[in-house]
Length: 460
Image 1 (cartoon, rainbow, N blue to C red):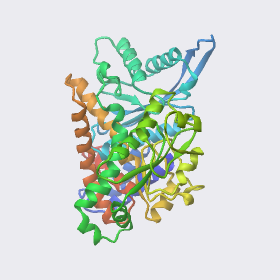
Image 2 (image 1 turned 45 degrees about the vertical axis):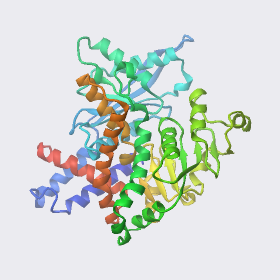
Image 3 (image 1 turned 90 degrees about the vertical axis):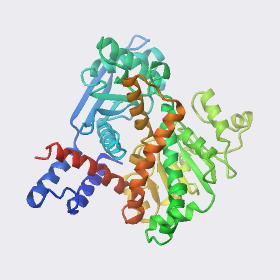
Image 4 (image 1 turned 30 degrees about the horizontal axis):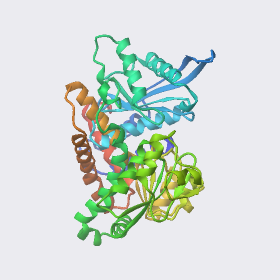
C-alpha cells in the first residue's frame, strides 16, 4: 500500500474508535475529539527522518555518493525497530511507509518495540563484496548517533542479510567502544550472537498464519462458522474443507521458506503448483518439487531455473511462464513474497485466488484491496502475516542482553505461540463483522498505541 492508503486506514480505524464509547471512556465530548485529532497527527507522521549520501570509493577508482535513509516513526512501545532495505527503488516515502507499518505491526503482536526502517538506494548485485562492506560501514558511521540497542535496532530487509548485519554491528562496536553492542543489530549470524531460526522466521510465520486460520481456527470454531453470515467466513469454510492449490510469488528467504512449509504441511492438503522470482514463473499442475528448487537456488546464484535444460539437468518437472503470470493463475491461495504494489487496479480483475497472504510489505494496493475484499477474498495482511522476522528479532535482542540462547525448536515454539495469541484475538472479530482482516488488525494496533499514548499524557 502507498503511504497515503496506510494513513487512511489508520484514520478510518481512529474514526471507528472515536464512535465507540467503550474505548477510552474517560475521554468525552470535545476533549475526546481533540485527543483523536492528536492521535491522527501522531500516528500519521514519523518522529524523525534521517538521510544522507554515503561517499563510497569503488574498486575501479571512482567515488560515488549513495542516498541512504533511516526513518524513526514512533517509539511509544519501545526502541525503534526495523530492517535496512538494499534496493534501487528505495525512496523516502517508501521508507516512511514501512516504518509506520513496523509501528503498527509491533503494536498488533505485543512486541515492545517502536517502528523504524532504513534504506540504501543500490542494487547489491552490482557491487563487489568489498564495496558492499564499505557501504555498510559508512551507513553505520553516518547514522551511529541515532541507532543503538536502546534507541533504534536495525535488521536485514530486502537485499541484506546476516553478513551485512555482522559488518554493521562490528562498525557500531568500533565507534562505541566499551558500550553494549550485541543488541545494536538483529538478524546477525549465529556466531555473532544471532538467533537460531531468524532467517526462516518470516517465511514460517507467513505460512503459519494461513495454516492456523484454515485448519486450527476453522476446526475449533466450525459450529460457529456454519451460523456466521460473514462473506469471509463463507470463504474460509469452503476452502478449509478441500485440497488446496498454492502459488508463491518470490523465492527468496520468505517465499522459499513459505513454499517449503506448504510442501511439508501435514495439516492442510497443500499442493504448491507455481513459484516465481524476478525472472520466471514455474508451473506444474501436479505440484512442484519444492525441496529440489530450494537446493537449486541455494547452490546457484539465487535464481530459479529459467530454461528447459536447467530443469531437466536437475530432474525438476515444470512449465516455464512469464514472471508476472503467477499473479493471475487459477489457484486457491496466493502468497505474495516479492515487492510492494504487485496487485493493483490494472490486474486485480484477473486475480483468481480466493485467499491471498502478504509475505512482502504492501504487495496489494489500497484500491485492489477494496476490490478483492468486496468479492469475499480473504487477504491475510502484511501487518499480521510477515511479523515473524521482528518477533524473532525481539527474541534475538533478549538473548543478546541475557547471554542466554534458545534452541531452534524453542524459537519456533515461542514464535508460533506469539502469532497464535494475535490470531486468537483478531480472527473472531474479523469473521464476526464486515471489516476486512487488514482493517481489524489496524484497529487492534491503533487501540494499543492510543491507550499507551493517552496513559503517557501525549494527547494534550
